[in-house]
Amino acid sequence: MPKNEHAEPPLPEIVGTAAAMQDVYRMVRLAAPRMANVLLIGETGTGKEVIAKAVHKLSRRADGPFIRVNCGALHENLLESELFGHVKGAFTGAVENKTGRFEAAHGGTIFLDEINSTSPKLQVKLLRVLQEREFERVGESRTIRVDVRVIAATNASLEDLVEAGDFREDLYYRLNVIPVVLPPLRERRDDIPLLAAFFLRRYADQHKCPLPDLAPAAADALRAHDWPGNVRELENTLERLIVLADGGPITPDLLRVGRPRYALRPAKGAAGGGGGNDVRTLIRNLVRAGLQAPLPAGVKVHPFLVDGLERELIEEVMRQFGGTQIKAAERLGINRNTLHKKIEQYKADDRLAAGAAAPPPEANGEPLPPGEMTPPAA
Image (cartoon, rainbow, N blue to C red; front, top):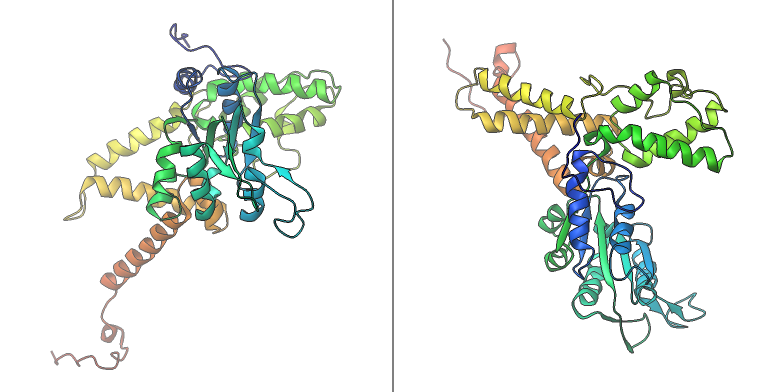
């Protein structure tokens, strides 16, 4: 594969040269020297914290603190105290004053991970910090001013959350000054060998093991897998393989040991080595077939293809997660309310189609429902 002469060099501590990452590198280098807020958008496990650290290290605040807060890991009240601090006696269990993360990040950067999980009440306070760079600790009226750069991350569509009324529109615009979209690993398959070598070296050193050889067949399997958990899943898999190999080579047999949920299997239709083009080829073929197929009367090609593909995608992901809408929505990268509405619409469409196709009750010798007129005799 010819190298792109104009490709951006990798960022600090980031592995990967795939074309899908070049826009990420470019946006980070443009954003880093500025004070503007950055919003990182991507599936779980795509490396949003690593990118946030790169923005910080390339900024004028590199010598200041980098403070990370996982907004989805704490209850609303605890998160408020974690972000803004509290004074002794502010609530039960507040036995001493506590410095909040915003205050601790003064002169540096604060990274708000899973910003999509914050409550409406907390969103109001976050909006004030972003606008005024000031806040009060819980239980105190004294205003504290901070000089801090905000980087936020989301694994769900904030636009969908705004539409559903679950996220403040004004806060969304404050956060989304410079959006950086991180591609999933399945869209940067060319980086999988580089990432595999990086993680193998890391965990061989950490576990004091010899660096194992990666058999070509095993490397092909890694590259062909869809990696629903993205880079984080790949990292965990390679750490497991280091332990299982016990100094020997990593073979396809080791990939099947224990048969975990993400047992390495080629993606459906994957030819391996497609650099992500295998899925694009399937989509292109689907579109061509749809354009050539005769459509039912009154049906337009756009809803026939787009709505049909979306429904198949949602139904397949729902099957994978046993019907759990929260997990399915996270995998799809859409708001749970949006997913619920689509599922209900599919059910309504199915009922409508079934009603249109069903013969009248009397055709099967069944009595008519009460209140229905008896059809005239032939």
